[in-house]
Image (cartoon, rainbow, N blue to C red; front, side, top):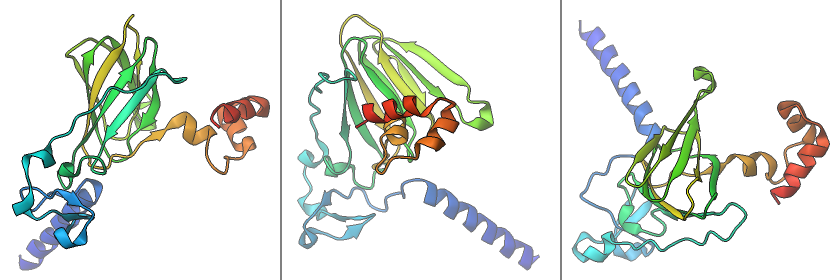
Length: 219
């Protein structure tokens, strides 16, 4: 009886550790405003914490400015992570403002460490994500208007495009203070050094001239 309880306890601890390694660790204090000066605090979750007695309301405040959409994609993602907003440290969240010109696109990408909740603040967006091979790469898409919300599950390939006549703005909330981002086209065709063209040619079933063109466009 005792041995079975012990084995069960070990299994639960192993399961708990696997979950803990997959997500941001839970904080063990009210807050840990990140600082770079080692004299001002203690080291927690990869950063030094500001002395709680010195923390003030401004540490939890941030203003996100409008992004410049004058670029080939017609969009601008303004990421707000712990590097820019130290008050997020150890809280397991981050955010981004996304500005879109008409027909602007936030191209297919993934966040390897986070689920994303997208809220449309202005305009009309078409959004979507593609499920994994396990779910036959099903494509889920929806048109969103002001005030509407859509979820992109953990590490799924997803995108947004402005299909309205005017500019659009969205707020992205992410379930990690360091969610990461991998833009698919840039990663595949713009890697340094480049992925060998014969591999990409076979993978995409096109000739090497097309691969070379796509690689050139990502430079």
